[in-house]
Amino acid sequence: GVEYVDDTDPAVMKEERERREESANRTNSVSQNMEKWEEMKAGTEYGKKCCLRAKIDMKSDNGCMRDPAIYRCKDEPHPRHGNKYKVYPTYDFACPIVDSVEGVTHALRTTEYNDRDAQY
Image (cartoon, rainbow, N blue to C red; front, top):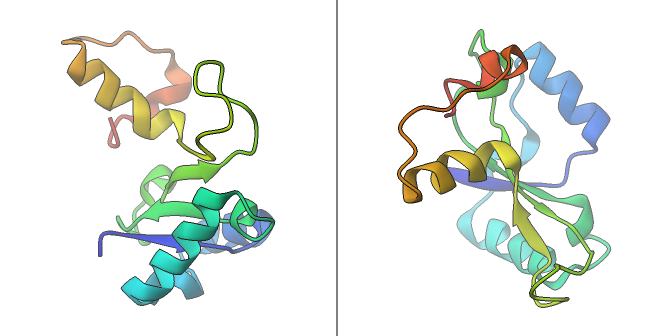
């Protein structure tokens, strides 16, 4: 697959990304990923520790391209849908999609997003 569910502790994940090391979860089977995804969707204690990461390039000079998280489990009510959903896309993943759907052709963003342009 082109993504995987990762339950690595956030501090360890940050260190691995800085060292350009792949997560132990990167090679999980589809069935393992699906089991973890279901935990995320259910909002279980285990699922809340997971995120869905895109397999991009752990050796990239751009840290933002080193298997970024694209979905996270957030156990808070949605303003419109209440408690129906537990998993939400990250800002960096959602914005380019929304911009495309809405026909945005030019995005004016501050310099803090320069490293994320490759994802956009």
